[in-house]
Image (cartoon, rainbow, N blue to C red; front, side):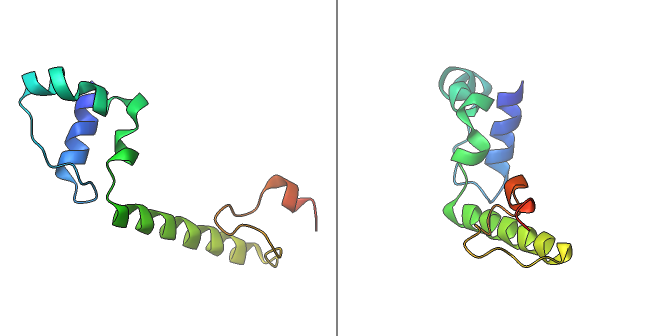
Length: 91
């Protein structure tokens, strides 16, 4: 069951603020809805510091891709998104 796997990831990782441990019975009655995929637990329970680090890493990765491409980054382009297909046609 994916909800149990999500709960385990959130509970064991230091990137998440959730620390409450449930018995299986309590999890099924109280926590199941919080950890199903539709509830986005792997995003919703992230610590703010982890969100900032993840966003920073994504920005750096996109900047590296742009630098490797060899083209100048268009003025006004959102660095967090990298190259869009529309931008590639505007050389």
